[in-house]
Image (cartoon, rainbow, N blue to C red):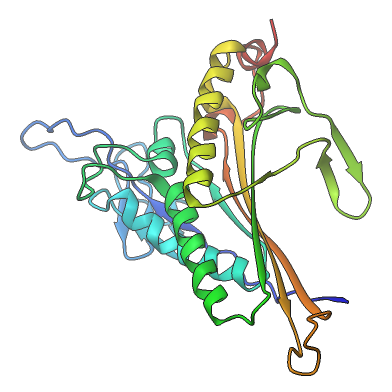
Length: 284
């Protein structure tokens, strides 16, 4: 017998702002960058005259990080909540939004120039994978004998309504079909997740998917910042209940939850499509 765990109560959305200082070029003497002002969790965008406005351009976030903050510090504030949600049976989504060239790839994929001790920052996704495996091992140690934890990974590429599975060989040669379901919404037909054999396997699949993502952009002659990618880690937990009363372990409590990392297109691509945009996304 298997008992489905009651769904967890969802929490509110957290919105974090990050002013990533990608341009390391020294400014001329007396010149100051005035494109953005941070004060605590408030972000102010100056008007065209370069003067702070009093209304309409001030935004308050749950957290705000300035240009002196490394990407790994920003990621480490977001990952623990995602791991706790999934272990507790609650789905979690991390949306990464920003203009092209704002450092989204650096945040998600990592870079060798982000100040880590070994000269490499592994990126938000790899940090999430490692943290999730640590959490699973900790929970498994406290769980009754016979508990089963299973992790799966899915990595999709989306541009307009065209979807490819980045974990499949030659994914550029075929599109996956979108279908509507009355209960669950829009589904991707034949998008089967990969069963994970461990942390190293998960990271290897992700890195291979990133290479496929870049190849797809070249193959379809599409700006890579115009597409969307969705990486989903799904955890299924099956824990025996009432083990003393039922030594055979026939009764189980099951929980299933996912965390998705969604890399949205550059904000300039989210406006009304132009003729140039439509030309780029067309398959030649």
